[in-house]
Image (cartoon, rainbow, N blue to C red; front, side):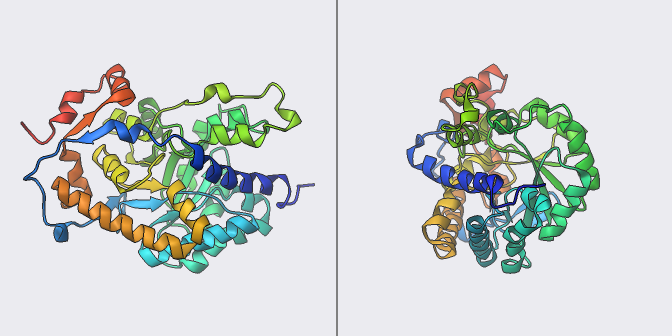
Length: 364
Protein backbone atom coordinates (compact mmCIF):
# COMPACT_ATOMS: atom_id res chain seq x y z
CA UNK A 1 0.00 0.00 0.00
CA UNK A 2 1.40 3.42 -0.97
CA UNK A 3 2.30 5.83 1.81
CA UNK A 4 0.05 8.90 2.01
CA UNK A 5 1.51 12.01 0.50
CA UNK A 6 1.53 13.75 3.87
CA UNK A 7 4.11 11.32 5.28
CA UNK A 8 7.79 10.88 4.39
CA UNK A 9 7.57 12.10 0.81
CA UNK A 10 5.73 15.25 1.80
CA UNK A 11 8.24 15.83 4.59
CA UNK A 12 11.03 15.65 2.02
CA UNK A 13 9.32 18.31 -0.14
CA UNK A 14 8.98 20.68 2.80
CA UNK A 15 12.51 19.90 4.02
CA UNK A 16 13.95 20.85 0.64
CA UNK A 17 12.34 24.31 0.78
CA UNK A 18 13.16 24.86 4.45
CA UNK A 19 16.81 23.82 4.12
CA UNK A 20 17.33 25.74 0.88
CA UNK A 21 16.05 28.87 2.62
CA UNK A 22 18.15 28.29 5.74
CA UNK A 23 21.32 27.55 3.80
CA UNK A 24 21.06 30.75 1.77
CA UNK A 25 21.70 32.62 5.00
CA UNK A 26 25.05 30.97 5.68
CA UNK A 27 26.23 30.27 2.13
CA UNK A 28 29.35 32.11 0.92
CA UNK A 29 28.49 35.28 -0.97
CA UNK A 30 30.97 34.69 -3.80
CA UNK A 31 30.54 32.27 -6.69
CA UNK A 32 31.71 31.83 -10.28
CA UNK A 33 29.76 34.87 -11.45
CA UNK A 34 32.31 36.99 -9.59
CA UNK A 35 35.06 35.57 -11.83
CA UNK A 36 33.60 37.32 -14.88
CA UNK A 37 34.05 41.02 -15.67
CA UNK A 38 33.10 43.17 -18.63
CA UNK A 39 35.62 45.43 -20.33
CA UNK A 40 34.09 48.89 -19.93
CA UNK A 41 33.89 50.88 -23.16
CA UNK A 42 32.81 54.36 -22.08
CA UNK A 43 31.36 55.42 -25.45
CA UNK A 44 29.59 52.16 -26.28
CA UNK A 45 26.32 52.75 -24.43
CA UNK A 46 22.90 52.99 -26.06
CA UNK A 47 19.61 54.68 -25.18
CA UNK A 48 17.89 52.55 -22.51
CA UNK A 49 14.53 53.31 -24.13
CA UNK A 50 15.73 51.32 -27.16
CA UNK A 51 16.52 48.19 -25.14
CA UNK A 52 14.13 45.28 -25.69
CA UNK A 53 14.58 42.48 -23.13
CA UNK A 54 12.53 39.93 -25.09
CA UNK A 55 14.34 36.71 -25.95
CA UNK A 56 13.75 33.78 -28.28
CA UNK A 57 13.93 30.38 -26.63
CA UNK A 58 13.27 27.63 -29.15
CA UNK A 59 9.92 28.40 -30.74
CA UNK A 60 8.90 30.78 -27.94
CA UNK A 61 9.23 34.50 -27.35
CA UNK A 62 9.64 35.46 -23.67
CA UNK A 63 9.22 39.07 -22.58
CA UNK A 64 11.91 38.76 -19.92
CA UNK A 65 15.36 37.15 -20.25
CA UNK A 66 14.95 35.49 -16.85
CA UNK A 67 12.35 33.07 -15.52
CA UNK A 68 11.39 31.44 -12.22
CA UNK A 69 12.97 28.01 -12.17
CA UNK A 70 11.37 24.89 -10.69
CA UNK A 71 11.10 25.03 -6.91
CA UNK A 72 8.48 22.87 -5.26
CA UNK A 73 4.88 21.68 -4.95
CA UNK A 74 2.69 18.93 -3.55
CA UNK A 75 2.17 19.81 0.11
CA UNK A 76 -0.01 22.37 1.86
CA UNK A 77 2.91 24.74 2.41
CA UNK A 78 4.40 24.36 -1.06
CA UNK A 79 0.96 24.78 -2.65
CA UNK A 80 0.86 28.26 -1.14
CA UNK A 81 4.32 28.97 -2.56
CA UNK A 82 3.23 27.85 -6.05
CA UNK A 83 0.10 29.98 -5.83
CA UNK A 84 2.04 33.12 -4.95
CA UNK A 85 4.68 32.40 -7.58
CA UNK A 86 2.00 31.95 -10.24
CA UNK A 87 0.39 35.25 -9.27
CA UNK A 88 3.75 37.04 -9.53
CA UNK A 89 4.44 35.43 -12.92
CA UNK A 90 1.00 36.45 -14.15
CA UNK A 91 1.42 40.06 -13.03
CA UNK A 92 4.88 40.46 -14.60
CA UNK A 93 4.66 38.23 -17.68
CA UNK A 94 7.64 36.20 -16.49
CA UNK A 95 7.83 32.50 -17.49
CA UNK A 96 7.85 30.02 -14.63
CA UNK A 97 8.45 26.36 -13.85
CA UNK A 98 7.13 24.22 -11.02
CA UNK A 99 8.97 21.65 -8.96
CA UNK A 100 8.83 17.94 -9.78
CA UNK A 101 5.28 16.74 -10.31
CA UNK A 102 6.22 13.11 -9.63
CA UNK A 103 4.54 13.25 -6.24
CA UNK A 104 1.24 14.26 -7.89
CA UNK A 105 1.47 11.45 -10.44
CA UNK A 106 1.89 8.92 -7.63
CA UNK A 107 -0.48 10.57 -5.16
CA UNK A 108 -3.41 12.28 -6.92
CA UNK A 109 -4.31 14.17 -3.76
CA UNK A 110 -1.09 16.18 -4.25
CA UNK A 111 -2.13 17.40 -7.71
CA UNK A 112 -3.75 20.48 -6.20
CA UNK A 113 -0.29 21.79 -5.34
CA UNK A 114 0.46 22.08 -9.05
CA UNK A 115 -2.95 22.71 -10.63
CA UNK A 116 -3.11 25.95 -8.65
CA UNK A 117 -0.46 27.37 -10.99
CA UNK A 118 -2.79 27.35 -13.98
CA UNK A 119 -5.69 28.59 -11.89
CA UNK A 120 -3.74 31.73 -11.01
CA UNK A 121 -1.77 32.04 -14.26
CA UNK A 122 -4.07 30.73 -17.01
CA UNK A 123 -2.29 32.23 -20.03
CA UNK A 124 1.32 32.54 -18.87
CA UNK A 125 4.25 30.41 -19.97
CA UNK A 126 4.45 27.43 -17.59
CA UNK A 127 6.94 24.57 -17.51
CA UNK A 128 6.09 21.25 -15.87
CA UNK A 129 8.94 19.35 -14.21
CA UNK A 130 9.66 15.63 -14.01
CA UNK A 131 12.63 13.51 -12.99
CA UNK A 132 14.48 11.37 -15.50
CA UNK A 133 13.62 7.69 -15.23
CA UNK A 134 9.86 8.25 -15.26
CA UNK A 135 7.85 6.72 -18.09
CA UNK A 136 6.80 8.39 -21.31
CA UNK A 137 3.21 8.17 -20.09
CA UNK A 138 4.19 10.05 -16.94
CA UNK A 139 5.68 12.81 -19.09
CA UNK A 140 2.37 13.20 -20.91
CA UNK A 141 0.45 13.24 -17.61
CA UNK A 142 2.81 15.86 -16.18
CA UNK A 143 2.19 18.16 -19.13
CA UNK A 144 -1.56 17.63 -18.94
CA UNK A 145 -1.66 18.37 -15.21
CA UNK A 146 -0.41 21.92 -15.77
CA UNK A 147 -1.51 22.42 -19.39
CA UNK A 148 2.21 23.13 -19.70
CA UNK A 149 3.97 24.87 -22.56
CA UNK A 150 7.19 22.92 -21.96
CA UNK A 151 8.47 20.04 -19.85
CA UNK A 152 11.61 20.28 -17.75
CA UNK A 153 13.22 16.86 -17.37
CA UNK A 154 15.73 16.99 -14.55
CA UNK A 155 18.93 14.98 -14.10
CA UNK A 156 19.95 14.65 -10.44
CA UNK A 157 22.51 11.86 -10.12
CA UNK A 158 24.50 13.68 -7.41
CA UNK A 159 21.37 14.27 -5.32
CA UNK A 160 20.27 10.67 -5.75
CA UNK A 161 23.71 9.51 -4.61
CA UNK A 162 23.42 11.55 -1.40
CA UNK A 163 19.88 10.29 -0.65
CA UNK A 164 19.77 7.02 1.30
CA UNK A 165 16.52 6.25 -0.53
CA UNK A 166 17.90 7.45 -3.88
CA UNK A 167 18.51 5.34 -6.96
CA UNK A 168 21.95 3.90 -7.69
CA UNK A 169 21.18 2.75 -11.21
CA UNK A 170 21.74 5.54 -13.73
CA UNK A 171 22.24 3.20 -16.67
CA UNK A 172 18.69 3.64 -17.99
CA UNK A 173 18.70 7.44 -17.99
CA UNK A 174 19.78 7.96 -21.61
CA UNK A 175 16.97 5.72 -22.83
CA UNK A 176 14.54 7.54 -20.54
CA UNK A 177 15.51 10.92 -21.98
CA UNK A 178 15.00 9.64 -25.51
CA UNK A 179 11.57 8.17 -24.69
CA UNK A 180 10.33 11.28 -22.93
CA UNK A 181 11.50 13.58 -25.74
CA UNK A 182 9.70 11.40 -28.29
CA UNK A 183 6.48 11.17 -26.26
CA UNK A 184 6.10 14.66 -24.84
CA UNK A 185 3.41 16.76 -26.53
CA UNK A 186 5.49 19.88 -25.81
CA UNK A 187 9.23 20.62 -26.14
CA UNK A 188 11.45 19.08 -23.46
CA UNK A 189 14.08 21.11 -21.61
CA UNK A 190 16.63 18.83 -19.98
CA UNK A 191 18.16 20.40 -16.88
CA UNK A 192 20.56 19.54 -14.10
CA UNK A 193 19.67 20.41 -10.50
CA UNK A 194 22.81 22.36 -9.61
CA UNK A 195 25.87 20.39 -10.74
CA UNK A 196 26.17 21.38 -14.40
CA UNK A 197 25.93 19.85 -17.86
CA UNK A 198 29.32 19.14 -19.40
CA UNK A 199 30.30 19.53 -23.06
CA UNK A 200 30.09 15.75 -23.49
CA UNK A 201 26.67 15.59 -21.84
CA UNK A 202 25.30 18.38 -24.04
CA UNK A 203 26.51 16.62 -27.17
CA UNK A 204 24.90 13.37 -26.04
CA UNK A 205 21.63 15.15 -25.23
CA UNK A 206 21.61 16.56 -28.75
CA UNK A 207 22.01 13.04 -30.14
CA UNK A 208 19.03 11.95 -28.02
CA UNK A 209 16.83 14.60 -29.62
CA UNK A 210 17.06 17.31 -26.94
CA UNK A 211 16.87 20.80 -28.43
CA UNK A 212 17.02 22.93 -25.25
CA UNK A 213 19.04 22.37 -22.07
CA UNK A 214 19.41 24.27 -18.79
CA UNK A 215 23.00 23.78 -17.63
CA UNK A 216 21.95 24.50 -14.00
CA UNK A 217 25.41 24.75 -12.46
CA UNK A 218 26.90 24.74 -9.00
CA UNK A 219 26.85 27.81 -6.80
CA UNK A 220 23.16 28.12 -5.97
CA UNK A 221 20.80 25.71 -4.21
CA UNK A 222 22.99 22.77 -3.20
CA UNK A 223 21.00 19.54 -3.15
CA UNK A 224 24.03 17.55 -2.03
CA UNK A 225 24.25 19.69 1.08
CA UNK A 226 20.49 19.64 1.54
CA UNK A 227 20.31 15.84 1.43
CA UNK A 228 23.23 15.55 3.85
CA UNK A 229 21.51 17.94 6.26
CA UNK A 230 18.15 16.22 5.86
CA UNK A 231 19.54 12.90 7.06
CA UNK A 232 22.15 14.03 9.61
CA UNK A 233 20.25 12.53 12.54
CA UNK A 234 18.72 9.63 10.65
CA UNK A 235 19.83 6.14 11.67
CA UNK A 236 19.87 5.17 8.01
CA UNK A 237 22.64 7.69 7.53
CA UNK A 238 25.31 5.51 9.17
CA UNK A 239 28.09 5.22 6.61
CA UNK A 240 26.14 7.38 4.15
CA UNK A 241 27.71 10.82 4.56
CA UNK A 242 28.62 12.31 1.18
CA UNK A 243 29.74 15.73 2.43
CA UNK A 244 33.17 14.88 0.97
CA UNK A 245 31.62 15.67 -2.43
CA UNK A 246 31.07 19.31 -1.45
CA UNK A 247 31.88 21.52 -4.44
CA UNK A 248 31.26 18.73 -6.95
CA UNK A 249 30.26 19.74 -10.46
CA UNK A 250 30.66 22.79 -12.71
CA UNK A 251 29.22 26.28 -12.43
CA UNK A 252 26.69 27.57 -14.94
CA UNK A 253 29.30 29.91 -16.43
CA UNK A 254 31.81 27.07 -16.79
CA UNK A 255 29.18 25.02 -18.64
CA UNK A 256 28.23 27.92 -20.92
CA UNK A 257 31.81 28.74 -21.87
CA UNK A 258 32.59 25.05 -22.43
CA UNK A 259 29.43 24.30 -24.42
CA UNK A 260 29.88 22.67 -27.83
CA UNK A 261 28.94 24.03 -31.22
CA UNK A 262 25.86 22.29 -32.52
CA UNK A 263 24.52 21.32 -29.11
CA UNK A 264 21.13 22.22 -27.65
CA UNK A 265 20.10 25.84 -27.22
CA UNK A 266 21.17 26.82 -23.73
CA UNK A 267 19.44 28.15 -20.66
CA UNK A 268 21.40 28.78 -17.48
CA UNK A 269 20.68 28.71 -13.77
CA UNK A 270 22.48 28.05 -10.51
CA UNK A 271 23.73 30.80 -8.23
CA UNK A 272 22.01 33.72 -9.99
CA UNK A 273 21.79 36.40 -7.29
CA UNK A 274 20.93 39.62 -9.13
CA UNK A 275 20.39 41.19 -12.57
CA UNK A 276 24.13 41.58 -13.15
CA UNK A 277 24.50 37.79 -12.86
CA UNK A 278 21.68 37.44 -15.39
CA UNK A 279 23.54 39.71 -17.82
CA UNK A 280 26.81 37.77 -17.34
CA UNK A 281 25.07 34.48 -18.13
CA UNK A 282 23.46 35.97 -21.24
CA UNK A 283 26.86 37.28 -22.35
CA UNK A 284 28.35 33.81 -21.83
CA UNK A 285 25.81 32.26 -24.19
CA UNK A 286 22.58 31.61 -22.30
CA UNK A 287 19.36 32.31 -24.18
CA UNK A 288 17.58 33.01 -20.89
CA UNK A 289 18.39 32.63 -17.20
CA UNK A 290 16.58 30.71 -14.45
CA UNK A 291 16.27 32.06 -10.93
CA UNK A 292 15.12 30.14 -7.87
CA UNK A 293 16.73 31.07 -4.55
CA UNK A 294 16.38 34.86 -4.80
CA UNK A 295 12.74 34.60 -5.82
CA UNK A 296 11.96 31.94 -3.20
CA UNK A 297 13.37 34.19 -0.49
CA UNK A 298 11.07 37.02 -1.58
CA UNK A 299 8.08 34.66 -1.65
CA UNK A 300 8.76 33.42 1.86
CA UNK A 301 9.20 36.98 3.10
CA UNK A 302 5.97 38.38 1.69
CA UNK A 303 4.46 36.33 -1.12
CA UNK A 304 3.56 37.83 -4.48
CA UNK A 305 3.31 41.30 -2.94
CA UNK A 306 7.06 41.15 -2.30
CA UNK A 307 8.07 39.22 -5.40
CA UNK A 308 6.29 41.39 -8.00
CA UNK A 309 8.20 44.59 -7.13
CA UNK A 310 11.43 42.59 -7.02
CA UNK A 311 10.84 41.26 -10.55
CA UNK A 312 10.01 44.77 -11.74
CA UNK A 313 13.29 46.04 -10.27
CA UNK A 314 15.17 43.23 -12.00
CA UNK A 315 13.59 44.22 -15.33
CA UNK A 316 14.55 47.88 -14.87
CA UNK A 317 18.08 47.08 -13.71
CA UNK A 318 18.69 44.52 -16.47
CA UNK A 319 17.55 47.10 -19.02
CA UNK A 320 19.92 49.70 -17.59
CA UNK A 321 22.91 47.32 -17.60
CA UNK A 322 22.28 46.34 -21.24
CA UNK A 323 22.19 50.03 -22.20
CA UNK A 324 25.46 50.60 -20.34
CA UNK A 325 27.09 47.73 -22.21
CA UNK A 326 25.81 48.90 -25.60
CA UNK A 327 23.38 46.03 -26.12
CA UNK A 328 19.91 46.89 -27.42
CA UNK A 329 18.84 43.24 -26.96
CA UNK A 330 20.09 40.31 -24.85
CA UNK A 331 21.49 38.51 -27.91
CA UNK A 332 23.88 41.41 -28.52
CA UNK A 333 25.64 40.68 -25.23
CA UNK A 334 27.51 37.82 -26.91
CA UNK A 335 29.64 40.49 -28.63
CA UNK A 336 30.76 42.11 -25.37
CA UNK A 337 34.30 41.61 -24.07
CA UNK A 338 34.54 39.25 -21.10
CA UNK A 339 37.48 38.98 -18.71
CA UNK A 340 37.54 35.61 -16.97
CA UNK A 341 39.56 35.26 -13.77
CA UNK A 342 40.08 32.98 -10.78
CA UNK A 343 38.91 29.37 -10.65
CA UNK A 344 36.73 29.88 -13.70
CA UNK A 345 39.77 30.96 -15.72
CA UNK A 346 41.64 27.88 -14.53
CA UNK A 347 38.74 25.69 -15.65
CA UNK A 348 38.76 27.38 -19.05
CA UNK A 349 42.49 26.91 -19.50
CA UNK A 350 42.28 23.22 -18.59
CA UNK A 351 39.40 22.74 -21.05
CA UNK A 352 41.17 24.56 -23.88
CA UNK A 353 38.91 27.63 -23.97
CA UNK A 354 40.50 30.73 -25.53
CA UNK A 355 40.27 33.44 -22.87
CA UNK A 356 41.91 36.04 -25.08
CA UNK A 357 39.22 35.59 -27.71
CA UNK A 358 36.55 36.14 -25.06
CA UNK A 359 38.26 39.33 -23.92
CA UNK A 360 38.38 40.82 -27.44
CA UNK A 361 35.06 39.82 -28.98
CA UNK A 362 34.08 43.39 -29.89
CA UNK A 363 37.29 44.02 -31.82
CA UNK A 364 40.62 45.71 -31.01
